[in-house]
Image (cartoon, rainbow, N blue to C red; front, side, top):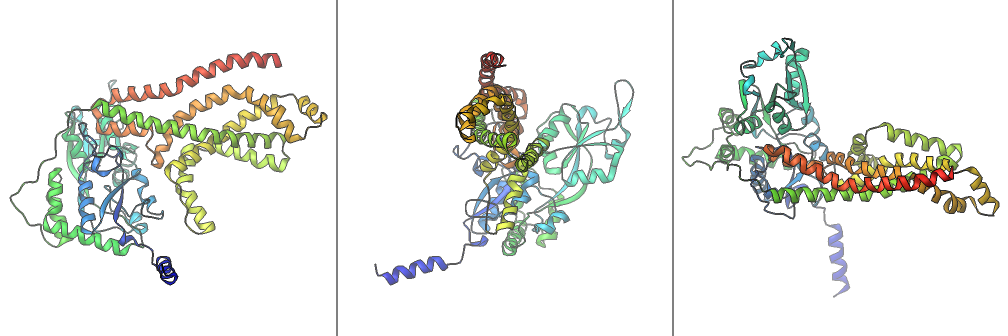
Length: 532
C-alpha cells in the first residue's frame, strides 16, 4: 500500500468526529425490571427469549417495553434496555454514555416533577395517570373513600390508631399524602410496588396503599383480595427524562410521542394493557393537537399468566447465587490484604501512621455499607473526573467488589490487630537479636502466628460477607436477594416457596464455612491455650 494512502487513512480515522448521541445505533433506556407490571414485567409462564442475557428486553413484556421499541424505531435505532434501581435511574444520566455503557434516557413511569425537570429536561408527556387508593376488600367498609383515612382504624380491643398507608418512596404519591394528611395518618414508604400490594393484601402492617393508576389497575385485576376505592386523585403525567445537552434527541422523542398519540399507535399499545381511558383522550388533544384516528380493529388483550416453570426459576436463582459467590470470593482476599496492612501500621507504625489508619477503621465501621456502595458507584467516578479530568467509571461488579473489600477491610484490620497484639513482644525482640530486620521478623515470625489466631473470626466474617453481598443490589448487581425480589414480583403467589429456596441456597453457601470455622476454633483454641 502506498504510504501516503496509509497516512491519509489514519488521519481520517483519527480526526473523524466522535459518534454523537443521535448517531448511535441503540436507544439505551433505563428502567427497573423489578418494578413490575404493567410497565416492565414477566408472567410466571414466560420463557426467556434470550436465556444468555437476562436483561434482554425481549425477555420482558409491558407497555413501556413496547413504547421504547416504537420510539427507537421512529429514531432509526434499536431499543436497548438497561436495568437500574428505580429511584436511582436519573443518576445514571450523569454518567458518560458510550456504545456499550450508560443510558440515553430514563423511561419507567417517572412523573413530571419540577425538581427533576431542572436537572434532566423532560419530554412531552406520553401518559396521563392519577393516584388510586387501594385497600383490602375486607377493609372497604372502613376505608371506602379518601377522607376515611383520617378516621383511623379501630383495633380488636376497641382502641383507635392511625391508618397505615404505604407508598413508593420519592414519588408524587408520597408528596401528595404528606401534604394532604400530614400526621393524621402513618405514612410508610417502600421501594417496591409488589411488596406494598402484598402487605395490603395480607393485611400485614398496611391498611391501604396509594399508587399510580396503571400499577393499581394491574395488581387489583390480578388479586381477589384488593379493591380500588374512592375517586382517583391528583392527575399527573409520565415523561421521559434526558440529559441537558441532548436537545436534539429530546426534540426527536417529542416528535415521536406526538406522532404516536396522533396516529393511534400509542392508543393500541395502551389498550393492549387496559390502560386507555378518557385521560388519554384529553392527553392526545393537549399534546398532539387532536384525537387519534379511531378504527374498529381491537388490539389483542394482554395474555393471561401461564403455569410457573419451577425448573427455570431455580436455574435463575442458582445463577444469581453464583454471582453472590463471585462477589464474596473476589472481594474478601482484597479485604484481608488491606486489613493486614492497616493492622501492621496501627500496631508497629509511628503515630503519624497510626492516627489516620485509626480514623479509616472507625469511619468504615461507623457508616453503613449501603452508603459506602453508593459513594463508590455513583460519586467516586464523578469526584475523580472533577479532580483529574477525562472520563472514569466503574462497572457495577467492579464497584461492588471494591465497596465490599473496603468495608470489610476495617473489620479484618481489627481482627489482625488483635492477633498481632496477642503475640508476646519478646518474640519480636528475639528475632531482632538474631539479626533479622523488622520486616523479616514480621513476615517470618509474627504474622504467621497472628494469622493462626485470627482464622476463626476471619472465617466468620467471610460467612457474613456472603449475606452482605445482598446490599450490592442497590448498584445494579443481580445477586441472590435481588433475583428473589424480582421473581417474587413476577410470581407473587409463590412467595413462600421462593423464600425457602433462596434461604436454602444461602444456607448451602454458608453452612460449610460455619463447620470449618467451628473445627478451626476447636483446633486452634487448644493451641492458643498452650501458648498462653
